[in-house]
Length: 124
Image (tube, rainbow, N blue to C red; front, side, top):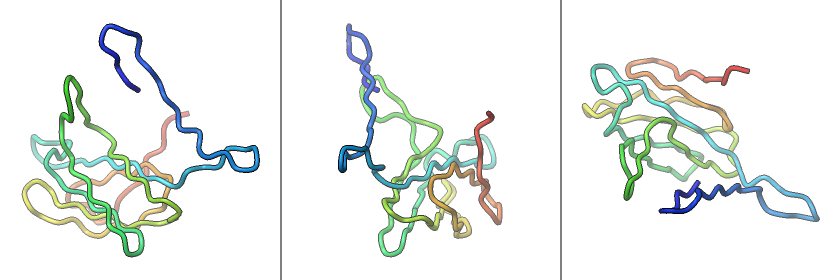
């Protein structure tokens, strides 16, 4: 979504790549939410690393991001054709989490100090 100053907002949807007349999915993904201990419950300042084979994709948990914008909540990571990934978190206090092995195309919640990550499913 793009908010246009003085104009209606624009909504864009990635429908994938057209292949032989039909859309093809672009790839797999993860949505990650942190639950930290103490007053910083969203883990602002944490560093998330997602590893799929050799590549490692880093993400920083932060608030803000540009003029009149902000971002907090689920952290999106595209994992391409990988069906599994390993997630590690460096919490704001410098401690590292366990390595969590997860399946792609999932919402994953990681609580500080937990031995395992858990999947989150939206209510239907």
